[in-house]
Length: 330
Image 1 (cartoon, rainbow, N blue to C red):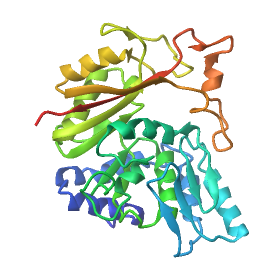
Image 2: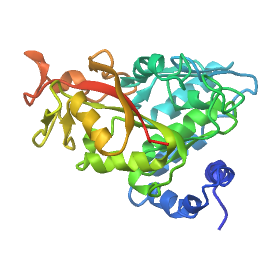
Image 3: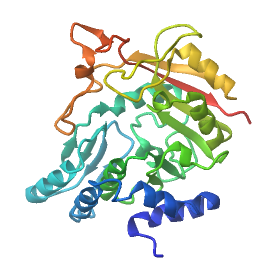
Image 4: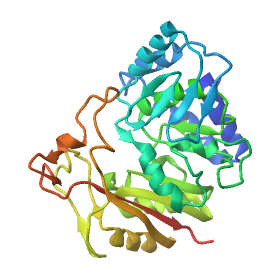
């Protein structure tokens, strides 16, 4: 069976990295993650990306800035066409992006998130804002800022996959095709892969009914000596403090355990991590997460108590996030 054009680079990257065992699972994982019968809107997203016009060869691409930026000379009609097609992929949750003069103001100011991580993580470029920045430079393997040889993003959302493909259309080969997206969850990563130098888990842990299992999965994906960057919701308290919300937390139905940072440090140590440290902890503000023209649904401000924004509308402490870094022992 021929490999679809949009997946050829992914297959080649897995071959180049020696991920042969995982490579054998890719056809089934891609078929399931991009199943049109499961996701009725998927054909429309695919069609929107396919209709993006050919861009000028001369373009300036900035992958290591706060906003992923692609500057190119587009006629007004073509820019409007691109803006309309990118709008069909909404809501845009994580960004921001500036693509051919089109500013995609996403729900989350993810650049703020990375700015909190960058000063404390020696491997990350000083002004990085997303996965693209990890492969931004021309020579992989020399940190900081020199680029990663292989960047793999996993997320089971097919919408995010096609948003990635849309950004790829603008970015082109600037990253030497080192950045890839696979529409799967962490449970689809082979157990004890022991491969990645760095693994990011951003905003995932509190959606897991078995958080220690998730931490063990992350541990298994890292090579010995590898580094985990973990960002998640936390609550204030000591090493024994863990909040288990009811059916919803800040209107989200699938939130399970919210530990304190101190408790989370203990969890990581129990799961075999070493050198565990909290590098940032702060409340999430309505300036960082909010509705925009590119994400017009309800956002954080709608989920807080209108009379007391320090509480969710269910009465729990308002969202607070921490970033922790830990290592798998050598």
